[in-house]
Amino acid sequence: MQRLGYLLDRLGHGPRLASMRIALEDRGNLPWTELDRKEAGDPDFSTEVLERDPRWRVIVRRYPEADE
Image (cartoon, rainbow, N blue to C red; front, side):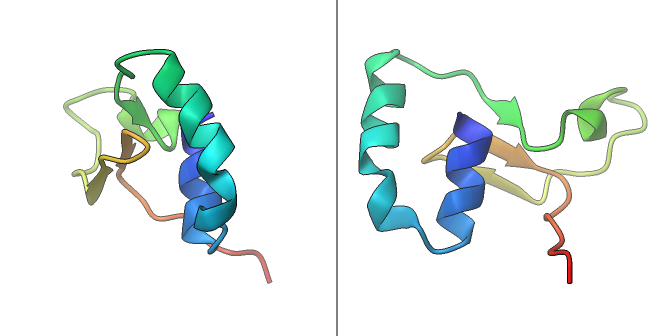
């Protein structure tokens, strides 16, 4: 749910995500999660962190690309 919230926020749906954000806050302290889990496989070969989104607690190593 954290990754979905982050992606929807990036697409401009932030104001509509209030109920999702409240549901996450009700769970307590959220752990940090990788946007793309494959990117974090081996710490020796992982790419560097580009962003840490504190609102959704998502670690971004590669920004998502839009399909055209």
